[in-house]
Image 1 (cartoon, rainbow, N blue to C red):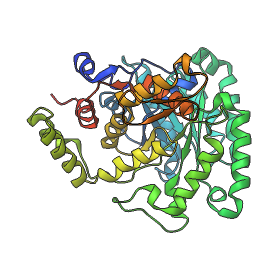
Image 2 (tube, helix red, strand yellow):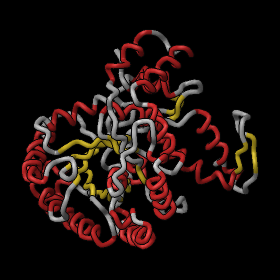
Image 3 (cartoon, rainbow, N blue to C red):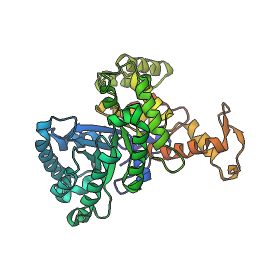
Image 4 (cartoon, rainbow, N blue to C red):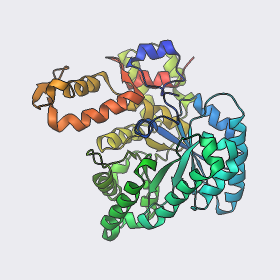
Length: 395
């Protein structure tokens, strides 16, 4: 699979200076953590789950979470588990490659139980999402993950590929100021002890807001809600450092989805991407409540987050289009990381519009090239509108 892999090769060639790389569940964790992109959540109880999963492949989705936790009722868990087992078997019998699939569980005991019940179809599973993660609450989940993978039948089906964990940081202990520092330190100890199993850390911003009876409106980002912004900053401070100790931290969910692809596909069909057309499309996106999402994606990256939790397919392509590295960013990163610059110094950017200071900007450049590997580098002059249009695969 690859980002924009559903776009015809000729169209990709016209968009990318450097195309996104190919990857699968066996790729290195470093690459997979950056490649998660817009991770689409779906309730595990959906009656046509296998069909839904494969449909999303055609929309450019590369990672999905099938949820047994907050997205379904307490009385539906058993039915959700049975539905998962049945539809994983269905997927295993089909042709085609599904996205990276993760199961969000409620209790540690579900991990080995589900791995066993999935049987040979467990080879389609990339890992588990662990709710309300703290040092105390998370340790049993991580132990269960290792134990499940070690079961002979599961190990045979996985053929040496690991099962990954994606802890969700959403507990009250993390939210409350008086317990936050100790909670973050405990989480850091837990995930460091299982570093080779942790693919990414996910932020549960809806739970943070819930604790104070808050809900951000569609014209505000998570960063406009100060109590949430402070938590994100502290999580990145402790767990997102660029010194080799940090982890990939994904952006929070965007709750609004009034926008439907069919509402602006006709506009994309009408004309080439003239400047006026691009402005018109941007206005259309703003009118249909996507402006807040676009601003939040940009702020996610500015604050050290990569990828995003998504609960509607209409969010996927905006996240991916804004994750593509611009030609200007790529040029700056390449210049900064040239071997002859190892001693440091300052240089004018290739685009002659900024200063690139080699030592302070090195970590940014390395992170940018990792993103470029999985999302690609746009050709000079290709921007968000063109990438969004291509991702929507307009006939």
